[in-house]
Every structure is written in structure tokens, then in C-alpha cells.
Amino acid sequence: MGKLLIVGTVAFDAIETPFGKTDKILGGAATFIGLAASQFDIQSGIVSIVGDDFPEEYIELLKNRNIDVSGIEIVKNGKTFFWSGKYHNDLNSRDTLITDLNVLANFKPVVPEQFKDADVVMLGNLHPNVQLSVLEQMKGRPKLIVLDTMNFWMDNTLPELMEVISKIDVIAINDEEARQLTNEYSLVKAAQKIHKMGPKYVVIKKGEHGALLFHDDNVFFAPALPLEEIFDPTGAGDTFAGGFAGYLAETENISFNNLRNAVIHGSNLASFCVEKFGTERMINLSQMKIGRRLEQFKQLTQFDIELK
Amino acid sequence: MGKLLIVGTVAFDAIETPFGKTDKILGGAATFIGLAASQFDIQSGIVSIVGDDFPEEYIELLKNRNIDVSGIEIVKNGKTFFWSGKYHNDLNSRDTLITDLNVLANFKPVVPEQFKDADVVMLGNLHPNVQLSVLEQMKGRPKLIVLDTMNFWMDNTLPELMEVISKIDVIAINDEEARQLTNEYSLVKAAQKIHKMGPKYVVIKKGEHGALLFHDDNVFFAPALPLEEIFDPTGAGDTFAGGFAGYLAETENISFNNLRNAVIHGSNLASFCVEKFGTERMINLSQMKIGRRLEQFKQLTQFDIELK
Image (cartoon, rainbow over all chains, first blue to last red; front, side):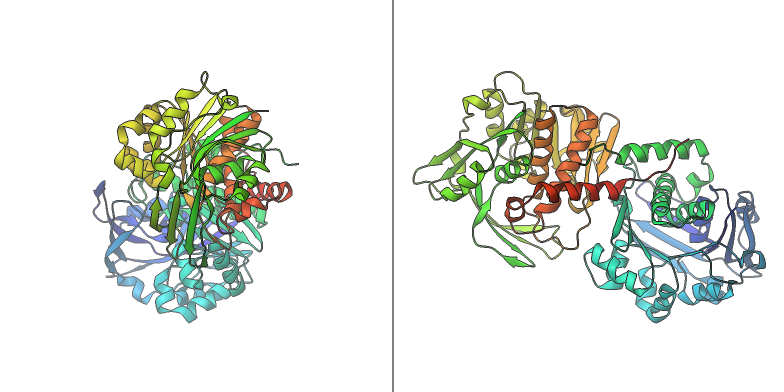
């Protein structure tokens, strides 16, 4: 059984979409990553930080999915990271209304002893120095290190981010971030430049337009499942990353062919995430539903042209 | 050998992209459709109209690809339809600079006797009344009628367009047009509404984001091949339609499974079209290159997750 270490935020979100709005609900990159990864037969643990305002039931929810929470520091008299955002009508863009870092401002991650030999490390979107600190605590080189990041760190901490990028195997960012990082409009050219920064594998997420996986001159594409309704995109990218990393930790095979499968598993799980607010859909998700939708992914992309 | 009738413009284009600009060059929907379809083992013919300013060499170029040109009316002292456009930096949008209808303003299409029993009719983007007139001239019902159209006809001739749509089997339009036609943002919902207007099959072209094929509750997706450079998108949609219709005319099989293959063939040929200005790439294209790129499409989308 492979071991997956997840680093990222565990947080409160308040979300407004054209379909409704929520109060403070469970959110955070590590939460979405952990819930997605928990669909696979792995040992997983989260390194994060919350305040003592964070409900015990949310911690229990993660524990019940066999996620090790001993790396989640609970700060006494601290307040949990809070993000609030409002999506535009097409759901492709959003305005951030509130970002209260709270306890995240002084986060010094501590990797639990039993996860210092994790096979796969999933670095969720956080300050590059936090990501670096986690890598430095590992015993030996993990088989695979996957990085998620965002334009905020490119704008504000580029040298530190470039150091992280030089140390990882897979980067998973969206199309606009890939363009910003490389100053290339063509995603093919952007991926080539990112390869040179370090990562052997480059995943470019295009939201409703699917995801591309680049490895040297090879490229693989997974569509997003065409859905009647997208209810709330929050956490879709993290869910994708969690499915991707979880599948690789379970199979312990980091060949390009298996990474293709990982991209499909990530896309599959993300297609559920967007159907309800926050983590709601991911919390109530059966293996049977996941399997059926994988079949839909196969139907969506397979064709039988015989090549001469 | 299947017979394909193509109706559309044969024209002059003048194009400006971030990479350069052209004088008046060969263009027009029927030209691109015909060149793409000529890659298949079919009998094809074009119904269109040009002025006597249209170079004989362009007509010869079509003839040399076994395209029947007896349905292209040459108007004495008439001027050929001329379109000029300028693409924005991202190549996803463009401004039309000039549209000189010229001989197209009074086009009364005449279907040559030997194409009145065509198996497949490809109605390229034109006034809906011209498209209707062609359908009325057919002897019996063609096996498959494919329609391309655009927002201009939705804005200006909606009742006539709706009549055409009620009589055809496959509509191929882009995402914005599908949204305009149905007032639905979700493409899944848009396709459902369009099914009710008549077409059994709905193809929604998303440019660099690929194409979706809907049939009842089934959906198939073909990505666009990720290219380092897109040089000139002019004619890509028509090339897609020509590959789609040409393959179906050759195979004479209009099952959903075979339409999937047709979408891949269309996407494959369109990926060449955008590599050079206008028709240049389509004119110099070997079967070997086409086959190799089909292999790339397969590599791009295949995965081997075993479903339980």
C-alpha cells in the first residue's frame, strides 16, 4: 500500500455562485486533495494548520476516511484560514471577496515521523517556503513529488517558487498560470519551457476544457466530462490533483502510461466535485458511481479508426 | 464509392494574423470543404458561384483533386465574393474588415444532374434560402445532410434558418453559436434543445478546445491536437466539416460509432489547415502525413484503465 503525504490548507470557505451561496463551510486545498485521494487504497496524511475554531466534526470526517490528521496543527486561540469568493455567471472566473490568513500566516509545517518516507508527496497550493520545508523534512527522495501552485506566488515569491519547481517531478497548474510562468501563449511551448525548469511531467488544467499532460515530446489529453450543470467549481483543481496523486500512490507506477490513467482518474473525480457546493459531493460518493463515470469517460473519448 | 455534394462559397480571402498578412488568396467555405473531402475515396462536386476575375488555375486546382466543378457558375463581368479579416493576438477572435458579396448577392444554386442523387450533402455556411434551394433540387432524400451556419444568419434570417435546421441530420456550429441558437450556456443543454429542432446529431466546435458530438444521451469528444504554433485559423471549421462529410461519404455508414471516427478525421485535417495561410497546407498534404497524425490523435486520447 503506497503512502501519500498531502500538504495544503484546511480552511473555511464561503462561496457564492449564480445558483446560491453558503455560510462558512469546510474547504481548503488539502481537504479536497485528501477526500479525492481517499477513494484509493492508500495510506494518506495531511500536514496543515487550523485554529481551535475548527469543528471537531470536520477533523472526524477526515479521520473516518482513513486520512492521518496527526500533521494538522491546531492552534489554541487561533482562527482558521478563511476564503470567500463569488463566481461570475459563466463560472469560469471569480472574485475573491475575503482572504483571512489567520493561523496560516505563521505556519511551520511539521511532517509526522510515519510520513517522512511517503512514496508520493502532493504539495498543495501554499507559500513556496512551506512547500520547501516539507521536502527538506523527508527521509530520502520520494518516488514522486507533485506540485500545485498559483499566479499569486509567481507575482510575489518567484525565486522561492522556482526553487520548488526545480525539485519536483510533476507540476499541475492552469493554462493562464502556465502562460504567466513562461511568457508563452502556446501551451506546447509553455510545457517545453517548464520541462527545462525541472519537472519531467507538466499537467496543464483547462477547467471545463480538460487537462493536458506533457512528457518530453509526448502529450496526453483528458477532456472534462460535459455536464448539464456546473454548480460550484471550488476545489475542482485540488480534487483533480488528489485523484491524480492518490491513484499514483496506489499503483506505485510512475510511467507515462500510468500517469495518463492518473489524469483520467483526476478528471473523473473533479467532475463530481463541481456538482454541489464545496466538499458536499465528494463526501457522499460511492465507488460504484465513480466506476460508472469512468465508463462514461471511456465512451467519451474512444474511437476505432484502424491505422495502416 | 459515395457521392458528396458540397454547397458553399468559393472566394478570395485577404488575411492578417500576428504572423503576417496575405493579398487576395484562394478561400471560401466550399473550397476548404472540398480540399479536405478530396482526401477520401469519393466522388465530390461543388455548387457555388464566382466572377470571371476568378483565376482558371484555382478551378484547375480543384479539378486536379477530382472535385467536379460543373456546379460552379462563372458570372461574366462579375466579381468573386471577397472577405478580409484580421485576427487578434490570441487567434481566438477576429475582426471582419471587408465583406464584398459581389456575385454571391444573386446566387441561385443549380445542382448538376449527376449530383442530385448524392449520398451526403454538405451545406456550407450560406444564406439559408440557398441551402433550402439545394435540398429541394435533390432526387429523393440523401442519406445524410450536414449543415454549417453562423450567428449572422441567426441574427438576420432566423425563420429560414430554422426551416433548414428542421430538414437536416447533422448541424456543425461553434460553441457561441450553439449558445445563441438555444439561449443555453451549458453545451449539454444546448445540444438537447437543438435535437428538438430536428438534427439527430449535433456537433459543437470549440476551436482549440476540440469538438463535441451529441446524439440523444450519448456524447463523444475529439480534442484539437495541441500545436506549437497556430498560424492562421481561417478555414479550420470548413476543413473539419469537409473531413467529417468526406469520411462519411466514403464509408457510407452513418452510425454514431462511425460519426465518432468522422469527428476525429475532421479534427485531424483541421489541425493541418491552421499551420499555414489559407489553403496552402491543405494543397500540399500527403496521405502519409495524415496517417501519422491520426496516430498522434490516438496517442493523445487513449488510456488503459480497466473497468470492473
